[in-house]
Amino acid sequence: MTPIIGMLGEVDAAKSSIVQTAYLQSIENAGGTPILLPYVAGEGHIARFAAICDGFVFTGGADVDPKRYGEEAKETCGGIDYLRDDLEFRVFAEALKTGKPILAICRGIQLVNVALGGTLYQDLPTERPTEIFHRQKEEKFSPSHRVFIKENTPLHTLMGADSMQANSFHHQAIKALAPGLEIMAAAEDGTIEAVYGRETPYLRGYQWHPERLAAKDEKNRLIFEDFVRSCGE
Image (tube, rainbow, N blue to C red; front, side):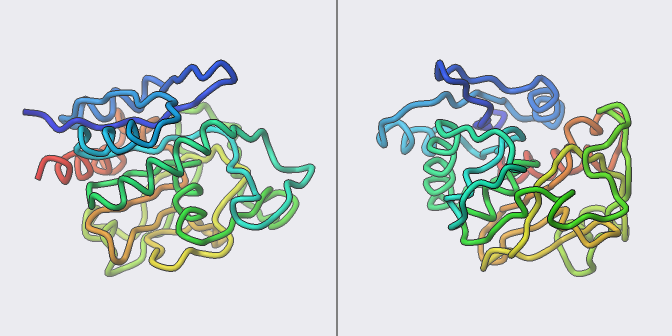
């Protein structure tokens, strides 16, 4: 039986939930069964999600509310999805209790960092300008820069390499790393691109969008295969 993967997606003002196809295909191709976890308010439902699913994917999207890490939103902060924040912070807390695998992508890595006590750059171009354009001009299914992988990390073990290709569609990033997280990879300008949970069975976060590269790039495909395999163990 294939592992059931709970997918956290975008939530609009009408409380409608969607997940982009690339995420679903990447999980399915890796051997998992993706299901969309919709917005619900009741805590009992959140606990039920955690019981049903074998793993969880937190996907990309709107900015996390800066109040979650003790700041007021700046003019350069993007749109905030309060319903999504409400759902995802509660699901993450419940999922963490279960010890089930968690994969966090783009907004997802930012949410995980904030949930565990870290902070974010609200806008990289104005707060930490560098030579790398983190909102790439290239087509979204193409890589735009490399990330450099730290030795003695799960990502280095998985890839067997010191670097890999990534794409880039974000204007926020990890500022202060949360306690309990360790860096797995960074861009050439030092922007944190991947983290893992030091004390958790399987918690991985990626700032780029591997789901958009997985169909053509083996290393990005391995991210999903490793995650789904862990969900099935």
